[in-house]
Amino acid sequence: MQRSSGATTSMLMSASLSGRMRGRTIRWRWIAICGGALLALTALATSLAWTSIFDSVLSLQLALTPNSRSYNSWLAPTVPIFFDIYMFNWTNADKFPEEKPNFEELGPYRYLERRKHVNITYHPNNGTIGYRTVRSWVWDPSNNASLDDNITTLNVIAASAIYRARFWGYFQQKGLSMGLAMFGHGISISKLARELLFEGYEDGLLDFAKTLPASTTGGAPLVDRFGWFYSRNNTDTDGYMEVSSGTADGLPGQILKWNHEDHISFYNGECAKLSGSAGEFMPRNLTEESKLTMFVPDLCRTVNMEFVDSGLMDGLHYHKYHVNERTFDNSSTSPENTCYCNGPCAWGGVMNVSACRFGSPAFITLPHFLHGDPALQEYVTGMRPDPDKHSFYFAVEPKLGVPLDVAGRFQFNVYVEPNDYIALYEKVPRMLFPIFWVEQKAKVDERIVSELRTVRAILDWGSTVCACAAVAFAIIVTVITCYTSKPDYKKAKDIIHEKTKDEAEIKLNPT
Ligand SMILES: *[C@@H]1O[C@H](CO)[C@@H](O)[C@H](O)[C@H]1NC(C)=O
Ligand SMILES: *[C@@H]1O[C@H](CO)[C@@H](O)[C@H](O)[C@H]1NC(C)=O
Ligand SMILES: *[C@@H]1O[C@H](CO)[C@@H](O)[C@H](O)[C@H]1NC(C)=O
Ligand SMILES: *[C@@H]1O[C@H](CO)[C@@H](O)[C@H](O)[C@H]1NC(C)=O
Ligand SMILES: *[C@@H]1O[C@H](CO)[C@@H](O)[C@H](O)[C@H]1NC(C)=O
Ligand SMILES: *[C@@H]1O[C@H](CO)[C@@H](O)[C@H](O)[C@H]1NC(C)=O
Ligand SMILES: *[C@@H]1O[C@H](CO)[C@@H](O)[C@H](O)[C@H]1NC(C)=O
Ligand SMILES: *[C@@H]1O[C@H](CO)[C@@H](O)[C@H](O)[C@H]1NC(C)=O
Image 1 (cartoon, protein in one colour):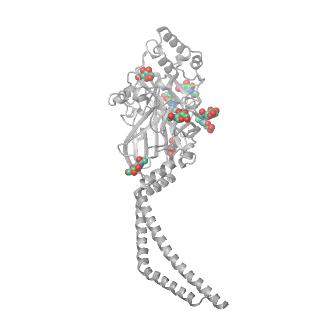
Image 2 (cartoon, helix red, strand yellow):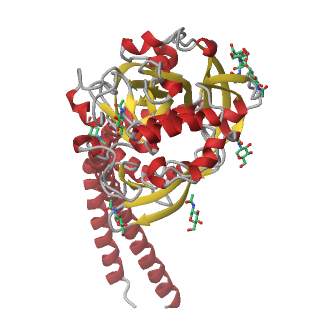
């Protein structure tokens, strides 16, 4: 009895086990078929929607939020930036104005520039991020030029004072004329490169300016030394920026507010519009017709760059956009630029930045007056414009909008004009005096280029790979279905058959 009951139990168990096992294989096949079909469909959908999926993943990575990939590199960019300064040495200053000023380019005086974004504030309510940029410059030991070069240039302190006084009355202007003579000011000045750049030099007129009412100095901060970059190291000179953080659909890094204002107060109409990239993020899907719009704080304006050419950089495709004849044109060929003139338009290819430099006679051009009005060259000698060396360009990976090779170049000039009341300027022609030009150059390294090549490959081939995967899964599903359908019918029947047999056996052996 015990034996037989034991045998029945074991038989029962084995019967139910084999039945369950057969049931399981069927279930696994169905799961495989359904799963395979699902994978095939997913792969197909992914393949079709690949660009959108890629775009949204990229957008998430590029957004300026503390967890994104781009945030840390944005915070303190590690791509080295070379800040090269070229000074113009005025070699025939003692013969002015009888002889046209002749300029000899000196330099580069190379510094390594480091940028840091500080005082960052998030505004999640409107998807913006506010910050300041602190820049520092370190003298590059590979320099061939020396900071002890003795350079002759225009006496800019006098030129500024005279320009600011141009609408004063006769007696005030005569007073200035005497003051200049008293302080020993000539038309030119000879200083060491280090003094002209970061260290600055003292001047009696600067101390005198401190005693004047703010209206005469245009509200400029009062300084005790003068140098082009004096007191700029480790400070924030670009002002407070508010840009899009790109968390929504939009592009990150597009300027919305500058110094708490949503327009540029120095210009009117269209020119007052604040728009464009703050320099780090470019639109994606760029074509040859696209314009790169960038806000340049040094120029206090938005600049449009147009396509020049395309090429390969270490196997990566790029589009190059540059500042051309139209960008800084006065109204002669580009009427939309009229609102930048602020009164009578100056020469073509010249940007009057006087208004955003406290009324100083500051005018910006491309180096060596590249793309400028030929009249600019008539008053000087020694300018040799060369598009290869002097253009302002951005080379960008067009699909991803990542800048690969960037050269921001411009020349700083001082405007002079004859003034009957001021002895020093009685005989000067109306002209632009070139002082120096700068080049800020950055190029991504080999490692980033190869990373970008991978990203481009994923973008370009992802769709195809997913389509292939879809086909592969579809084939697998078909194979499984064909393999299981016919022979499995038989097996299912066998199982039913066996089951009945088992039940019969149980009935035959009760207890
Ligand atoms: C600049 O020009 C002046 C006048 O010609 C000359 O004496 C001086 O040596 C030049 N400076 C440099 C650094 O070449
Ligand atoms: C950042 O904020 C701190 C405190 O609010 C301030 O002391 C500092 O000057 C700010 N930095 C810049 C560059 O404005
Ligand atoms: C976004 O909101 C903040 C306050 O939450 C405000 O200070 C800022 O000006 C706003 N920016 C824009 C562009 O509207
Ligand atoms: C700028 O400041 C850094 C220190 O933060 C210093 O190492 C560098 O020499 C300074 N640059 C100039 C041009 O003075
Ligand atoms: C100095 O001269 C060398 C050799 O001509 C050149 O390779 C290097 O780039 C120069 N350095 C700078 C800062 O221009
Ligand atoms: C620079 O050269 C001028 C003459 O060209 C001279 O008067 C002046 O003392 C020199 N400056 C220095 C610091 O050597
Ligand atoms: C880029 O263009 C593709 C189609 O060529 C489109 O699907 C994609 O959304 C575009 N991306 C952006 C960021 O505009
Ligand atoms: C430059 O701009 C200033 C202020 O915007 C204006 O007063 C001046 O007339 C302009 N100068 C020239 C030469 O156009």
